[in-house]
Length: 416
Ligand code: C5P
Image 1 (cartoon, rainbow, N blue to C red):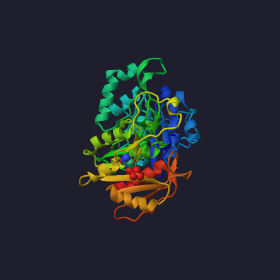
Image 2: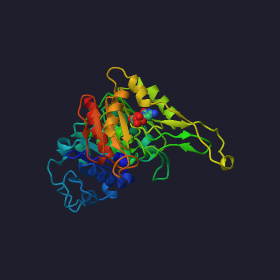
Image 3: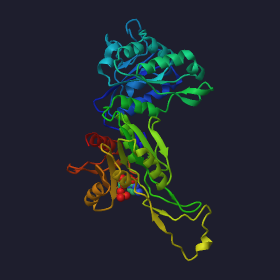
Image 4: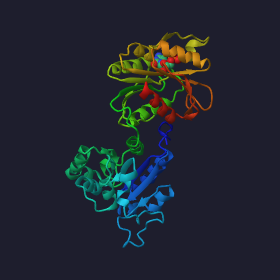
């Protein structure tokens, strides 16, 4: 699991996974592991065709419970169900509707899409889906011609109109060696859509700008000035905001992590480009979270040629000029209702620096951390931060995975 996606705050949430007959069914056990790692309880239903590809026992062994395979257990002796199977439960078809916070069908076959679109309930999965009151997360996978067939597309239109979330398949070569759209979506997208379905939507309707990663200030044709920021903290914030319903615009420095397609990503390289992208977006945003490790200075550029060693036998000096402070500029310009969260990474004097930045940058909240320790800061999967907001006492949080720090930052942002 990518460090910025490893959320663990889903304890007590239950997810139900439906698996259909597609070669992509071999990827489904991985989903169970990811959601279990996030803290969720996971139940599974396999269609008859899915069981041709993968066994119920695989899911049970990974901790999925219950695992359903058939609607009517009696009369199906030796049907391959595991001893942990829930097939004897008379009301198993109602169970996800009564207890699950999210219902995902991945991979979803063309025939299951048709069943869902037409409200059929002639197998366990379609009956459970029909009895589920919330929106389904549907991740289809099939041959490109089956996908593009108007019958399938019409069924998808019906499902979208009803509010179900369709995680579109990707393009490329499918298992049947055809080129086109039909491959199961990136598993990370499916994993995250499920988390989103089980998350509080307390940021719904709010547009949030996030800056993240390092910037790179070019000096000559081959050299640049930068810092070791991985962008993991900012990517965690962007994803946590999206999980909780926000419309997220991420302005990303070089080398920053993968983000789900539902986050609008603006890739930039230099501090000046990051400033221009953020500045252009700011007026239409409700909040900004400025996690980027922006280079404070740029070297005066030497042009596109490589500077030769032979030209500087006695050493040389480089002039630096200050870059715009994105957070301070946009913080000063914020209108009523806009909220600004800044970061402070220091090697000492953290509390004073946080208080100073809160005022100087006109921020509503500052998240500070001491860099240098192994469990916090640049490149680490965890962070130990102190948070300060106007009118609230500073709070020190324990060492937490960065996604969980991000989740708590959103908890504060909601209440700012
Ligand atoms: O002043 P300092 O660089 O320590 O402040 C850090 C905070 O300011 C971070 O939130 C960072 O993203 C933001 N910042 C910025 N533009 C800069 C420098 C810092 O947005 N040029």
